[in-house]
Image (cartoon, rainbow, N blue to C red):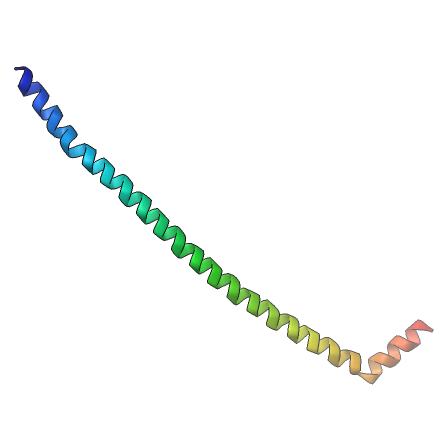
Length: 82
């Protein structure tokens, strides 16, 4: 009678312990892979956005230089300072 009660518990442990270990190891591996993929994607996005900001700033800079070269603007600023 003692063996009949212990055998199902032993079999359940024999099956569940490797299953738990496998599940934990798969979770750890999968989470590390997802973190690395997301870090790579974030890095790519940051690079693209930095390039976009650089382009926008160069456009503003060229527009400001064009405005600064305009004779009407220069005359307005000179008259405003007097």
